[in-house]
Length: 181
Image 1 (cartoon, rainbow, N blue to C red):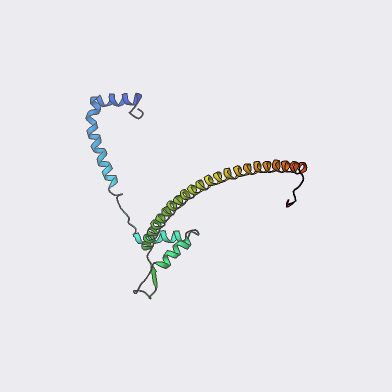
Image 2 (image 1 turned 90 degrees about the vertical axis):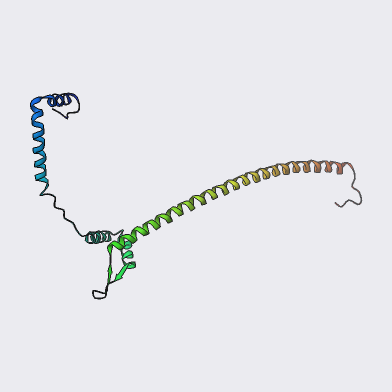
């Protein structure tokens, strides 16, 4: 027969559904099938409920046994122990309250982390803009220094030419009496 959806399986289902002999027995067989399912399902519908506090406490103890979580779990226990007056006056920890406080802490830490990420992005943007300004200033100052060096070189060449000309002048004409040199 196959899956009854494609190819020969589909053709077989159509031919079977048209058969007069099968049509008569289908309704009767379906009713018998439903009855048998009901008989089998009734005895197995027993629901066992475990107390929530035991499973929460067990989960808390299991997490507390993990080395990487133990310090955090002990910190929560120490912070949220309640005084129990019925017993011997000792402190008792409610694991459900511990999970509640852990969830509250997680939400707070998440907000804090998101805020830090936003602040970090803002600082990076500010830093990048300052770097761009400084690079621009450095470029301008480098250009000015290069221009000044070129001007200084030209002035030194001109001073050299003037000194040579002055030397020729002094060699050609005698020094004056008031000459400071």
